[in-house]
Length: 97
Image 1 (tube, rainbow, N blue to C red):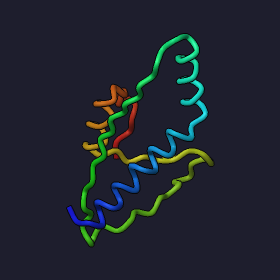
Image 2 (image 1 turned 180 degrees about the vertical axis):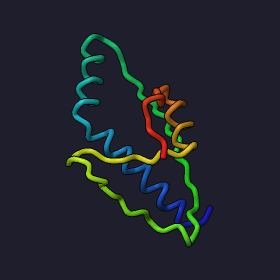
Image 3 (image 1 turned 60 degrees about the vertical axis):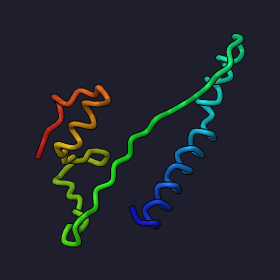
Image 4 (image 1 turned 90 degrees about the horizontal axis):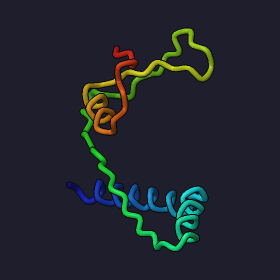
């Protein structure tokens, strides 16, 4: 893994940590547990995958296809499906393209 990717991963980890630390909902939930007499230890595990894109693979244009505002078409890869299933998210209703 090159130094640039290591730096970007560290930056991503810091951003996730900051987001959790600044979350009023998380702070409130932790305080509620403390209020009833318990200490809280929060340990989260995240799996983040990286795939190197080929130089030929540019970003895809998003087409609305006549959809209403707020709606969008979603292309789901086999890797996406595997990830969703690992999170116990039902994928039967997803439309694959």
